[in-house]
Image (cartoon, rainbow, N blue to C red; front, side, top):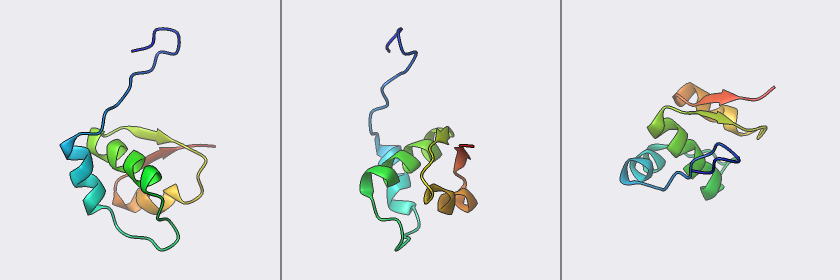
Length: 68
């Protein structure tokens, strides 16, 4: 954990990869790094903060998204 940034590194775990494999496939969003971030957020019940306009595709599947 970085005290200066108040962040914690999140390693990729088996539950994250399971969630990744269960994500719906959208032709307009195929970036594997983005999809892993989404899978981690879902597996950990975290809110994902991003301005990416494709991330709302995953909100009906449980993604909590924050950006204004």
